[in-house]
Image (cartoon, rainbow, N blue to C red; front, top):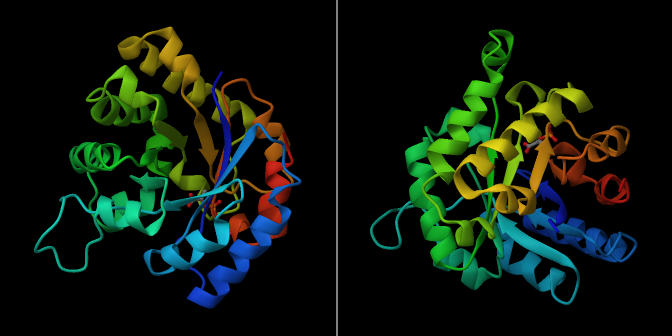
Length: 251
Ligand code: PEP
């Protein structure tokens, strides 16, 4: 049975001491959340080692928000998958729309990064999603299908066990506009059928697909009640431990 996950993406927010406090508050409340709901926090690179020690012994797992597209060497300013692993990460987010939009992250690059991350023993949360123009042009199914195929069709069924997909419509990220439960569900079902087309029904059934985009305590329950939505990737609301935990309690 696929795992339910609520993951917080802190983005470029909090200083190190603030991040440590936030992690402590999440850990303190994490025991209230259902045992079958996994919790992940994706902290900035500078916070990872400190936050890892706060999370130790709790159910909350640590993620990075990105990784380098090379294994090691002369790539000033980059952070490798081995560095992330040794800092205590279990996961990395890849392909967040902010990285696709502002840092030229292509599907091709994401294949490289995903290979490196899996090779280092990290799980990957791969983000996909259409922008507003694509949604208004009625191209959302097509865009998301292409993103999923371009990246994930390069992997095996075995590797898919370590990959979570996050559907994040760009027009809903940080805007306060959430996709309706129906809009989200139909794309999640589409992603699952695209996965089934390559890997078969069982892998598709077993893959966790998260929704992200202005998910908050007031709308999480309705989203999570959909049959193909297995949790959330949470931005703004993950910066408040109470809201983040409340979202995890929406199951
Ligand atoms: C995100 O950036 O992954 C996200 C979902 O942000 P927000 O919840 O703030 O829309």
